[in-house]
Length: 442
Image 1 (cartoon, rainbow, N blue to C red):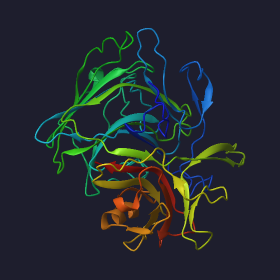
Image 2: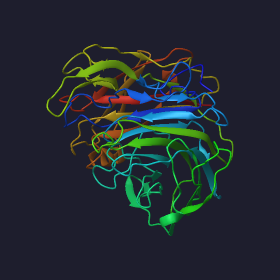
Image 3: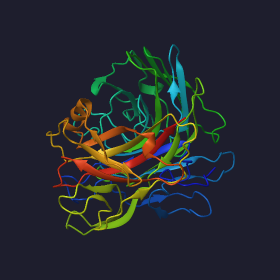
């Protein structure tokens, strides 16, 4: 059911799910200065307040639908952001599969346009990072490289028509990518049948040494049954970690460019994973930048459009006042986290975010992020050697997925604010921060 406290994830409870949106489009291509921008998505009938044909900006691209017939209240995700766009919902509670085979399950209409269009993913990252990606090649899929993770895309829509399969599974170990070679992969008529709006059941079974993916054909009776549930993929693994964070999401490589619908609508239900019931951190979001910008026409190819910025611009004070800007000429810092921060019994805190810096291969460990809570002391988070490897890799587009340790003494019970600056980051194209959460462990 829709949450009473709405955040970046629309109807999803921000205390239960971290939600992130991302596209790197805009650094070198028209339109400039619109990184991580979102245009409106056209959504189907969701409920009385969101009827068919409604155009929405985030966060209303992620909504619970009213039940219909036998169908339960499924979650609609409108994946609109173009050019390596990613939508990611991450349960706050960690998943532990130490010394066992853990199971992650979900129902989704797993239709894919293939690697040039849209698909769904199931990722597991060791750290509670927001958006992250894989780089099989420099534009597949551009964005923040993760330290330790396994990334499972469902984007192989090759023959026969109306089926889907697991694509290239990628494992990152200390920022180094390995593409898995399957020991088993369904083919031909053994591939799961998919259909828009009709859900498939998926289970991912994982240990530190093995991976299996099981999947049904799409349900033909409003998700009462899921026919032909069978193994479709298997591979050997060598993971050096066994506790992490599960990410369910949708990707949009470039549906408009390749002649598909501007948005791909996915429906989700019954997300779960098993294992020990580990505590989830208390989570507090920094809201997205909701300022609307306009890209003028660039005829004959570009008609122009309006967009929501989502990311926050950072200035180090060298070109304009130090702090956070809205990209439209207004300084907005400090920004306030949503909710009243609870520090009772707190043992540690972290800041998680995506950061853009115009690295172009030149970043080093003297670069970094400055931040301060509640108008207090500026703290410095310099790039680690791993961060430098990630951001200097061709195809990262200058993005990082960061986890920053926070001193509890910098926080206060109740309202908390944050301000950002930077150390040695290029200002020729301003740094950007997005998908920012404060996590408090107790």
